[in-house]
Picture (spheres, rainbow, N blue to C red):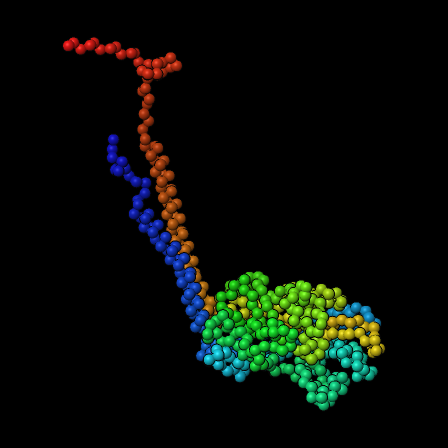
Length: 503
């Protein structure tokens, strides 16, 4: 027999070992590089994101106009049956709009406190006309609160006013009557008292207060969190310390590395409160991943559905779910809600012609999860006036007590092509390149290992087949046996005993 060590192997060992070793090394390297790249990205963000006088993002933060398209859209509710409403019937409205304005926001008077790691600024808002202003009939429900006291005579409850008048102001008999009374009483109101009324009367190119925010110099977890508003760290409009807390950012930037499990907060000066938003969905803006966050359905919910909001109830009773009473903020009986009373079924049922829709009417922000930058967002709020039946005023003696929807606003911002290009150059492209290198290494290593194993399998199967062909056939020469053949001697004749040996 030949030595089995001299038989030819079905595959050469050295090249196989080298290929498998190279594949394993590349696989380990690709896997290790992912957390290494995460650390590199984190260090880069720790350097680039904190805000200071020398930050590379300072100019864009102050004036985002070149990078972000901002618009303010007004939607008004046109009352179609005013005479019937005066008789106590259900109001029916038709939505008119949008009436769109380009919004310009530039931070001014920016000062940095390097010891407290904060920045203080104001942000005036300017609106420029984009679409044509049209005339629509609208209910002037602002009069209702003071008609109760009989301060106006022969004044119509419903008027036909243009959108321009409703937004920017018109001469109002009631405001003319009240102006000297308010001035004499030295009463401070959030609206000018000079005989005119408009939702944005004398508010163009004005700011909504002084903000003090965290710059992230001491850590990015509190980056852009509002520390103070109008030089105060808490509010004074609500019942408890909890509801008067100022939480969150202004809704444009958050800390890096956002997770879908995070609950984000934003502070709204329009509501004079903070609201929370939770993860809703994931999608892409071009090729940049986005996490969409929305307020929960219980945002304006009250006990027993949401006990956390009990401290936002003014007086002894809470409103029905879906609205927030901001009378203390506005100095007028105004309630805010989501457009078309979204998530406010009780109030939706009291007004005809409303069609709440989650996608069109809910507030949202789209956050790029690695940097925490908001790429797209919309704040949508509806202004409603509290109208109360009054038996002592003829015009209102039959009218229902209700929340009447005046208008809703859609304040939106979306990063434009220039802004997206800048973002990619500064943050996104280098991240993608690093992670792409890791994934390529993992893919190449997997391909090397799999192809090598496949090659070995093919060679082995070929070798085994060749061994079967090369083995010669050996004829069986064993004697034939039958059932009667003795088993002990295999059917051979018994041997004769040999003769004894002579001694």
